[in-house]
Image 1 (cartoon, rainbow, N blue to C red):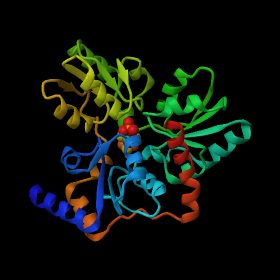
Image 2: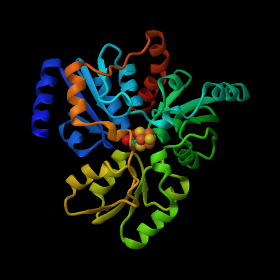
Image 3: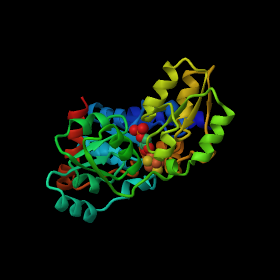
Image 4: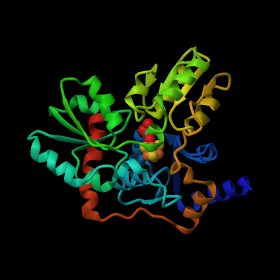
Length: 303
Ligand code: 13P
Ligand code: SF4
């Protein structure tokens, strides 16, 4: 069954001159057929440079929107139009406005996991792999970091000279993982380093040996000499880790390490969105001009 669908996808990609981008959190069978698989920063760079006319983005809405903003003349298709990141919505324009009035030199630093609307109100975007590099280059003392308070607090710890302000946003998938669950996993696997995503709560990040983006976690497991690891992020990363390191063991701390929105992507939906040109990302031109600025700023500061 899958073989048939994969054949159709390959054929459709040729006919439509399309490329498939997939995030590490989607199912392994999608990562297998994608042209590019990566973390949010890597995929946004691919979106800027790819030559094909159509981009199919197996991920969540903010990823497709970012690809469209960076490449307004391309067709960007989402396999599932309801695959949306709840955290992307966890700040609002009135909060940002109030903070801008309160602080003269405020820089609004927005995690790429945000709506295009929030991006129109922002100065610069960041991802988990470049946030420190970017914020450390900003001349501003006052940083409003939205919407992920956990990633923001992680970066703030490394930059004590700045004054960070947060909103209450968080990733529900990473938030669900508890300190007790991690402690239990450490008891069961005392020799396994803990690799964690900074979207987890700070109390968990403190108990880790390495924290970084999905690509950073995968690189660490590849290059480190240990033969077992506790992985504290969405379970999709295990596909690449296990494939690259068949003799190493990878443990999750709970069965809950699943992002239901990333899991809405499927091979069938990839085929169908290509076949019928479904779920195209369409944004107003003037709006796109504003929303792409912080993304372009990110790309120039992250170089
Ligand atoms: P990265 O792949 O950039 O680490 O992002 C993680 C994530 O939560 C994407 O939704
Ligand atoms: Fe959003 Fe979290 Fe899912 Fe990433 S893992 S898409 S941040 S809900």
